[in-house]
Image (cartoon, rainbow, N blue to C red; front, side, top):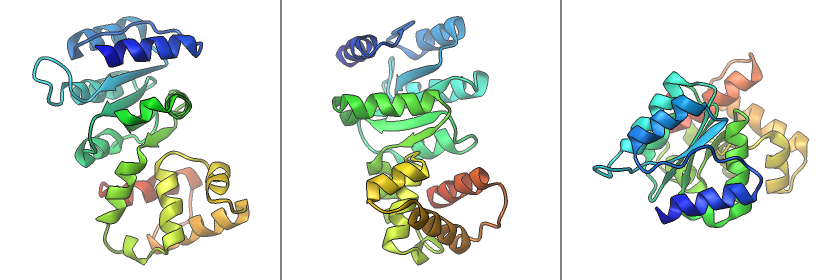
Length: 204
């Protein structure tokens, strides 16, 4: 309840309109149906059992209202939940640890990207997935793994370049090398980008 009220106030103060703030999955789904918001924030664990009701509700939203961005919050890194969320349609979706909410700017940026149709994965999730990845991901250089991790977090090339303090050309070179090593044939660029992320998540 405290997190919900805190997020409501935070979003309102940032200039967003909060159309509903519900405490359980059933009420949450009714609110989404009634308002069809640009985006929603949902906890993985909700009443009555506090297991995965929130995740199930998030998956229903993605199925029934594909235009609604979904940002899921979790207390711990749960890889299965992250892969379930992005497996079929890795757009307009995010998975963050609750600790990230304390960085207001980072949280608002993540929500904005999800609402705009982008994707956001918590760096801790990305790190764990990369740590257990096997060939052909094992053939990537350390720098290529960094680039792939940032791609998975939803960053565009310019943002990746800024994060790594390199030029845009260097980022392009690393991404093309990633595509080659993962056996992704030339084609529509965004499609290959998504496939690269899904490949290391183990869903493609």
